[in-house]
Image (cartoon, rainbow, N blue to C red; front, side):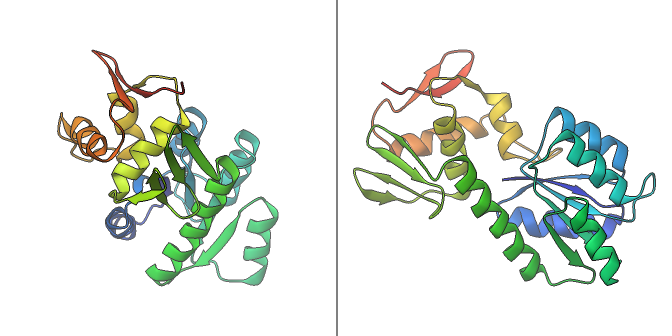
Amino acid sequence: MQILLIEDDASLAQGLQTSLSHEGFSVNHLSYGKPALHVIQTEPPDIVILDLGLPDMDGNDVLKAIRKQNAVLPVLLLTARTALQDKVAGLDLGADDYLAKPFDMAELLARLRVFERRLSSFKHAGLEVGNVVLDNIAHQVTVDNKVIELSRREYMLLKVLMENANRIQTRDSLETKLYSWGEEVASNTIEVHIHHLRKRLPKGFIKTVRGVGYKVNIE
């Protein structure tokens, strides 16, 4: 799950990136509204966490622009503005949720998990290719009705491949979906994840397209 964090407080942003990364989220951070809008238009994330007090433009204006670009992208407002009218204004402009500073990390994580469940239900309640079933609600994978143990990154990688069955996914595109900007990724990281997945999946389930990437075929 890829999050775009739009927050100008550098220490808070760094803390959030660290905490959310430990929970398995891929977090990219920007301090200004205008470049964030460009990213949302060209490489939309799964979720946006938006601070209202940005240096270059008001967060509510960023929210308006997001909604013009993307009507369904989940947006959580994170702000020190605690007045009821501020909360109502943000929700009326199209925010999906609102969390006032200071906040407890556990509450933020709980709200993000709600977004995850909604997104999973909206996109695919379940993905099935042959005898492999990926359950987006339970966040588990079964082979021949037996649950297999996967790390969060392995699960997300398999999810991307199954959602795009019959379409080749390049290593670069997979890295973009699984990792944050600037995160150190070894040159063989995707290959290692694929190797671990193949140990748990039916033989030939993930196919290598030499020199290009990987794909899962629907027979």
